[in-house]
Length: 533
Image (cartoon, rainbow, N blue to C red; front, side, top):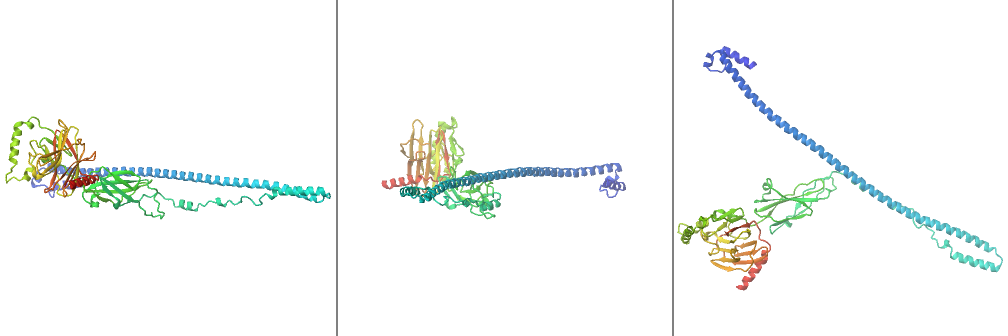
């Protein structure tokens, strides 16, 4: 209101109202209405800002109160739970003490009864022996007063016989048992001291992964670790028995653990009862697998160990969809043959493609073989290539045909050597295994337009092994562990995986290590090769 009065005075005097000269010439009522309206708008805007601020603060306080209330409720519930667990532990301790006390009492009572019975027996036997001895003594004294020689000799003989058989001379004159029961004295000083040191069960410390015992083999990782042997602050070293361990692992392409583990997505393996575990069935599609482990006791799980990077070298590739024949559809690690209808098999188009094929066999200088290899396959070359090259090292991957397959080929090729209409195995730069169950089942190894028939049942899973330096290309029936065929070559250009699919489809498995069973096939194949040479 004070501000409004000030503005009204300024308007009446025509000074300092902040309006234009034209406003001064207007009637005072009009100018006053405009000024009051502007003031109200400004005040409303300020009030809106205040309301918005208060609403935000109100929501923030409500969330804070809900969080505090939830924390308070959780604290009360957790404290009740801990107290209940403490009472249960104390009850178990009391029961254990009562049971032990009853056991000790029974032992003492049994020993006392045994000794009492033995002493009672000796006491009874001693009394009987004493009475017998007194009677014999009285009879001997009476015998001394006998004057008749014959009677005296008879009595003396009887005394000698009775003395020989007297219980007093066969009785042990010392107690068979002692009255000492000190061997049953119980000393609870150590237990009492332990009870006085009772404390809440601490959280177990982080184990230490034994890097030297970690093994990577056949797409499985065996991780071993040592439990922490540190003592806690109380000095007694006890953290309670370890109930189990939990392991987490994550894939990464760098070994910078601090940078990798921050936002990593961890896979978990729980309820591990030993200090080692094997993680199997992995796909090594990254350079490293980061592993960490923690211990869990009755109280809670402890901190994770320092993460360790395990190197997992494997051959990873996918289908190069840009090279796939128009009738081949790539879906991740699967390729299916999906014909395009009548047009896709029009003889006229096929004739044009054949003409194009004859022309492409002798490329012009301006069009190199490499550029031809990057074109999409066409005609009857239902081919697709892999998107990764091999120019060294040992590589392994697997192929599985789908249930409705009719014909496929799998192998390797020089990318630059394949034209758009070239088929696998018909050139010097491609090697493949061809399988068919169209009309009849057959399998053959093909290279340089030559085919070798293979007399073996059609496999359900084929493993392909390529050792670039040694020139080994092996095809394995993985389910039967049978060597289907082996090529020996001297590779001179980078290789790519190559596939042909007609009617049906295939799936591939990559990111696989060279399996351990390949060693037997390699040694056998090289032995046969040396014999043939």
